[in-house]
Image 1 (cartoon, helix red, strand yellow):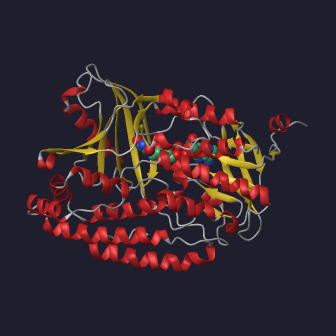
Image 2 (cartoon, rainbow, N blue to C red):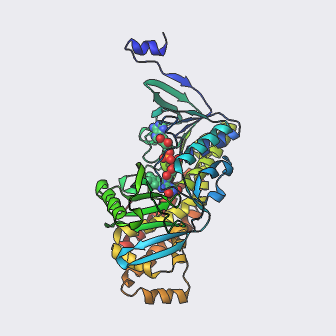
Image 3 (tube, helix red, strand yellow):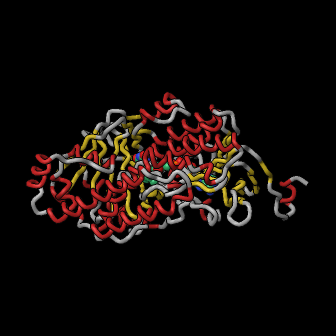
Length: 471
Ligand SMILES: Cc1cc2nc3c(=O)[nH]c(=O)nc-3n(C[C@H](O)[C@H](O)[C@H](O)COP(=O)(O)OP(=O)(O)OC[C@H]3O[C@@H](n4cnc5c(N)ncnc54)[C@H](O)[C@@H]3O)c2cc1C
């Protein structure tokens, strides 16, 4: 009897089983780059995506793609370029209504505002051309695993009512924020980071708005704090007349009230008179340090599923692309040596920390700081600081200020000196973290000791800022 006949007869259909070399869950940036890398090396990668083929790649985003000049080459950059709708953006405009000020801050590196759906389709096309296989309408519901927290051996999914089992040497979890896979793996036999909770996430929402006249700031990413401290609004120009307008806010806030903040701001801006909205989407994104470890035997988490997002800007596309590449290269090594143990996969963690993880962990200190200090005070202080130094702080996790500049900034920032002192202490802790991540362990057995040292620095962060402990 076929599986369809069984279904019609009312019995549970039998699960079909597939056995590629690697199963990748999620056809977002991290999944596509991982699958393309594996397929380029001649191995069989199957990407499971819950969306339909038409909807795949349609992902809530501010559409700002930073660092496109240095994206991994598993998918040729020429493939992505047609989705870049505005490559003329070179700075951020920070509107600070409390101070009646606009800060212009240079953005280092190449930046493009993109048509995110078109980009999503193009990375899927790129991975398909590399040889990866995409299975749409396929919702992964569970993982299969050897007994007692052992190696992950595959996943269980459902496609249009039909259960499916995928067996593979490696599973790459590219399922985005709050990945369901992690609820189902028993991590008791590895150091995989399970210290994850709601306070580590933001909700973000965006609309695509069409205006009649070109906006004056089509060369800038515009940011503005929401009326309440917990969030910020953005206006990113896809073109001179097509604007991605959105906001991000801590998950602990009431979302609808904050969406009202966006609505009010749009109504109050003359450039949006008569504007039309054609696409509304929201999602969660991690605003935390990267997972201390994102590997378990037979399993690696990448991109949003492992906290690979700049926690101060919410930019996660570049981190996702690189995490996908690094995990895939580790998977290839595992396939070639036949060893997919935690120890064998560990180098993936090291490469992530080395490339951007340390920086993001340091940047998270400023996130923690922002939860504890008065927003008006912070805005006043930002308004008094030189733009290029803010840019360094925003992207590098640290900045240096010479004596002359420090003196000028101090004069400009009278009234905020208490906050400056806290900021200074936070910066010292962020620098300590950067140093510590340089010594990220070379194998899982050394992780616990390293974590203790890192947690000592975090204790200093909480003490200096007065913030509630986050981890
Ligand atoms: C509103 C918003 C604005 C943002 N703006 C920017 C920005 O301007 N610039 C930037 O760089 N970053 C931005 N980000 C962050 C960025 O979008 C993410 O960091 C990035 O998309 C992460 O890629 P990913 O591949 O890890 O996950 P995702 O892109 O989320 O992809 C995950 C995929 O997995 C699929 N999936 C999930 N669960 C299952 C399942 N159980 N079974 C099968 N498939 C599943 C999903 O359908 C999805 O296709 C923004 C995020 C949000 C929410």
